[in-house]
Image (cartoon, rainbow, N blue to C red; front, side, top):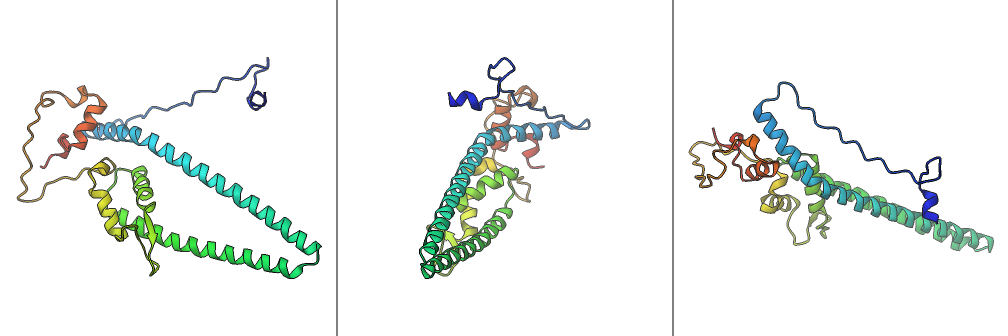
Length: 230
């Protein structure tokens, strides 16, 4: 019954019921316009859709980092035990070689980390050239791009197919499946003729009579009033 011992108990010895996390409602500003409200509703809907993905990523990285830390601690303890054993046996030269090998490994890890930081900066700069919806969307794009990067013979970072970081990010942005991460563009340039909208199913329906899914669908199709060219 080890699991029962780990649970918090009431005074009568029964397990406490976990409290439901309090979710504070978003309080809109008093001077919020209809357009601002629409943007807020769309953003909230996008955030809701992104949250499960972000939570899974956070959980995966947290588990990975915890496993790596535990593994490193175990290796260090075993190394310390081995060095002490060698010294106790009078094998000081072997103990010294082991210490030197550890120092080299630490230096190599530091060099690798510095190289990765350079890679991260290049990826962030390429991503910042595009307009994403929010920081969560930026982080998702970053993780998706980085996982496929490899270091070339000249030390630069490229996609595993040889494409540069800049072109890799551009391809990610151009992929229609990733469009929900980006802010919609306004096509208002001179001489631009927007395509005719043949879908009239929602023309007579107020935006505020629609569900959030319907509003989001229109937003992704760039059919919201504030997305139309002026």
